[in-house]
Image (tube, rainbow, N blue to C red):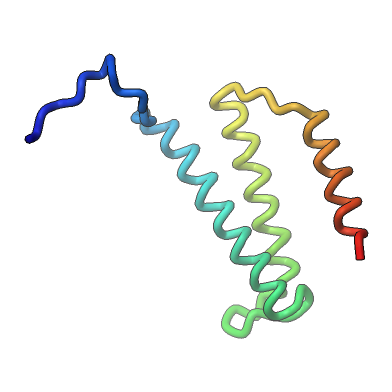
Length: 102
């Protein structure tokens, strides 16, 4: 049975605007690249050099974090997101406490 779903009963409304998709897709791509850089720092050490490119892991991580921050700002602007700075500050405080736990 290949009946179309009635849009009145469909709770899902995926993004179809190509510019919106580009914003979200690029953010996801950069987040994944940042994750890869962070994993490499854990595996090899933050001040070690990537064997193929000779790029220092610290520099790669710095570059990817900068790319993520840039894309976060673009997504926030594009979708007029309201980022709660109190939540950001509170999260940082709690994580700093957690990091210091032995």
